Length: 386
Ligand SMILES: *Cc1c(COP(=O)(O)O)cnc(C)c1O
Image 1 (cartoon, rainbow, N blue to C red):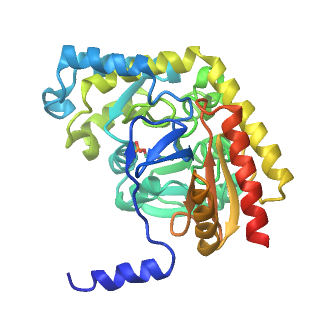
Image 2 (spheres, protein in one colour; image 1 turned 60 degrees about the horizontal axis):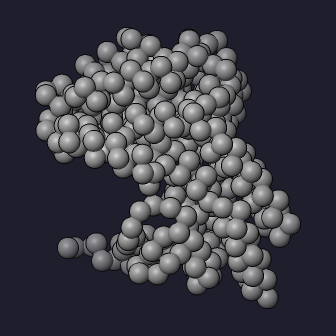
């Protein structure tokens, strides 16, 4: 096809070509990747629930009761008792009036901005927001502004003079940096300007706050301060899909106007059943968060001792800043030779000159796994500086 080959070749020459790996077997720290055993530090399975037998059993029970496919969109005949119960439990878990399921987090984000904003409105986003939030903002056709990363004062300046309804959007935990948004300061600025605040807590739900209720709960904020809370189910909760939680009128508006909600098939009911179990485990098994935090501290101390540029993150997302895409690729290849899998994050996912290794930890990792990673990082660091 005309021009595509050249475009792909340019991407390859720039060291930016993306590719997939084939994984055999269940998710976990030890993966079989293209037939080879590897130690993985790149999933978002923060609580180690993706392969939990209790979730697998819930899926089987769910399939027995509901069959496999939802068969239709929620508004047609696809909204099962399982979906409905999960929505009620998510509302309770997040301390919101209501919650609404979406098939993916990407669609939830497109749905919120599309339903709430039109061409006379404004959407104001953190510069480092997830791609789905940026896309949602652009697709909404509202005036699109961005503010300096995690800077509430800069947000205030952007809000001055922004026309129409004003929706402010931030990640709760930034997916490529691991830092936590200053949600309290952002909420104050929004209140002062009569703007709505939306927090995408894809990496905070299950991980942060009391019982894993997320970054917004950790800051002690309710739906009066943060009216729009989005979370995903495919990360710490180990299943798939997403939700938006908030006041009654928000959820009803999404049901009426969010096209990625209306025009898509509901998630399989059995997945909703498994997510109900995951939610209960996430709330009850505090040891998973304690173990995760212990591993984060161990990794940080070790990486700092090696003199590497570890970014400032309190979460299981622990990036090592390298700079160029070429550097990130070189480190990534060296780690892979030693049987370690991490994320090599390059532009356009992150800004030019900030390519990095993205290490993520899970409660399923052991101290021995982290020690192995540190030993290999030490070897690779010596090799790269030689
Ligand atoms: C993963 C992610 C999403 C998308 O969620 P999916 O369910 O995987 O589509 C949205 N926002 C953030 C911040 C994410 O990290």
